Length: 209
Image (cartoon, rainbow, N blue to C red):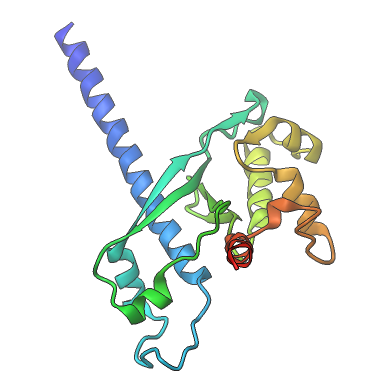
């Protein structure tokens, strides 16, 4: 009985360490995407020495922390993809006091009232995908990898209808992303899933004025 308890304790600790590690890696990936997504600032009163570089990214990583939720996957067992992809939604970003005024302009992320930054991470390949909130969207790369994963496990093609009906993740509308990104031009009113956090921030600024 004691041996069983010891095994269970070590199993729990091992699983916890893996979970903690995956959360840490997800936060690092999130920070990388946020940093790259941030548009360059051009102001005459800012130091010309501050440029988007490795050192600026290091400062960003050290001086901010991200709070995240792991989004729940409601997948039909027949898809057999439950462990391959993890989904994370940023709920808050907190800055330390280490940023000077110049760095703040370059590094602080503009958040609207309805911002929704979401990424997915392929646990097998390490690839990450921006699915909401960013100025670019990686849905089709994500969808392609989902189909590859399904085919390697089921030895058949994943039908689009099956994917939309059975692979459901909270806070993500995959069918909206598919249809919206297939259009020749982006229509964010018709497909609200394509709205970026920059859009919601700009709308909030306009309403305040």
